[in-house]
Structures are given as structure tokens and as C-alpha cells.
Image (cartoon, rainbow, N blue to C red):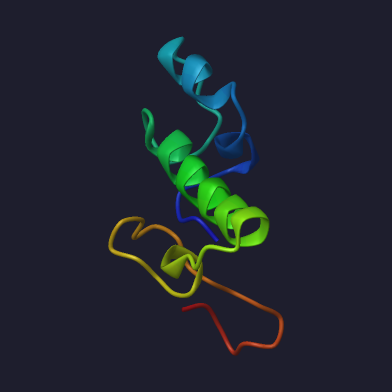
Length: 78
């Protein structure tokens, strides 16, 4: 889960629409949603396609404090 994100936060049009003054309801401003998305997509691909360990995918990170890990089996998010 990404605190402050809405569905369009993970698309290419969120940032340009923000620059035009369109409010989609998310709290991630400027390039933050792009930076968070890039970091996690890159880590996922490096792990699964290159076989490189990715600590970013293991637990909460100071690099992306708005990201929390949740699962149906967990009793909450961490």
C-alpha cells in the first residue's frame, strides 16, 4: 500500500495532470508517485529477471516511507 496514492498515481498521466491543475485525489505530489513506482518496479524486475536480491521488497524502507507491506495472511500492514 502506498499512503496518499490513488489508482492514477501509478500511471503516466498523474504528473502531467497535476501540472495542469487537475486534482485526482491523491496526496503524492510532483514526481513522488513516479519515483516510488520506478523504485518498486525496478526492484521487482531485478529480483525476478536478473535474480538479484532486492531488500526494498523485503520490508519497509526509509527510502520510500509511504509504502507499507500488507497481505491477507498478515494481521495488518508493516
